[in-house]
Each structure stands twice: as C-alpha cells, then as structure tokens.
Image (tube, rainbow, N blue to C red; front, side, top):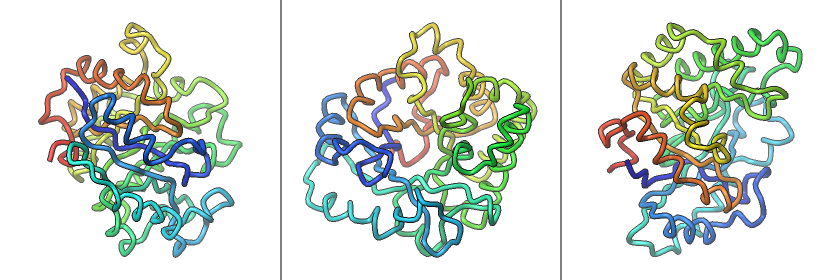
Length: 265
C-alpha cells in the first residue's frame, strides 16, 4: 500500500528541529516522494495551562501559529496542507496540555505518552517496569482527558523518546492483554494510532518485520484502531526513508479503510 500522507512534521518553529526544516523545503520533498497530504505538527504547550518547562514555555499558540501566514501563501493544488500540533501529556494535571478553546484552532492534534525524557521523573528509568507503567498511566490519562475528542492520534505510542536504553525493552514488557485494553478504548474514542517511522529509518526490511513495534501495530489493528502515519521529521532528510511507511503498511495488510479519516478525505 502506498502511504500518501505524513501528519507528523516539525518545522524550525520546533526548538528541537533543524533550521533547514522550512515549509518550502518540506513541500518540495513531499512532492518528490508523492505525498498528497502533509500535516505540520510543531511542539506546543498551551500557555493557559500551568507547568510548561523551559522547552515548552516559548512554544505557545502565538509561536506555532506564525506558520499560518506562510501556509496561506501557498498554492499547491496537488498537496493538501494541514496545520496541527504535537502537544504534550500533562502529568501535573493528569491530562493534556491544551485547552478546548485552542484545540479548536488546529486541523489535527497529536499527543504522545512517550516523551518520558521530559515528563517522567528520572528515577523511573529503573526498574524498567516503572518506566512502562508511567507510559500506561499517561496513555490512559490522555484518552480520558476532557479534550480527548480533539485528539487525532496518539503520537509514537510507547516508543520512549531519548531513552537511555533500548526502548523495545519497554514495549516488550507490556502484555497483549494490556495493549488490547488500551487500544480498544482508543478505537472507541475515535483516536487514531500513529505509525511513526522515525525509529525505523535505518532498519532493513527484515529488521522492521521483527521489531517490537510491529506486535503493537498488529494488536492496535485487531482492536479496531485506525492508523495515521508520520515521519516525525525534524529535518528534510527524514523523508529520504519514508518508503518504510509503505513497507509497514504491507506488513500489516492495511487498506484505505484502516486509515484515519483525515488521511483519506
């Protein structure tokens, strides 16, 4: 299956992205690889919600919305462009770092339960089970939050970002039954499951087929989840290996009916 969308793209408005990660550069790359939909999802924390750290504090709505005038100038009839964000799990209020008022301003919203390098106490790194349990709790609190109806997809679920050890250890610690319980609730909420190809950009097809994430993806499909693909690009090079998205779609035997509605409308 050819994946023709990417809904996880960071421009240089995200403080962790490369300065070369420009709107024009991404548009050019998207057309080169045959994308028909691209969603810009810069990091975001709503300034009306207390708790933003030094990384998130400057990345408020005014900051990320400065992309809108650039989008408005574009004339790309063959490429549909979406304005979204990757907001954050809010452990201080057991929810999501966005208000309903601001959520309505975005075309789509991604929320990770796996930014544990920023949102989890460092002492939870060991034992590994404590780390996994933190992500389970974060996942539950995200899908139970008052703004869950605005969430388009869970971003890189259970793939602990910047983990000091192989994060597949954590993925493997969670049982099929635990995953199914969470994913069935995700499907009922109408929240998609993101297949984030960033961690697989350097893997061979055989390595991808045998990686821990594939078990998760299959369980999400069995549980009725819809899927949304994303490169998690922070620079233009991430799209050089985006064909891995097609490989994963084929491994899971995905059809258009398995994709989130925003990816096929």
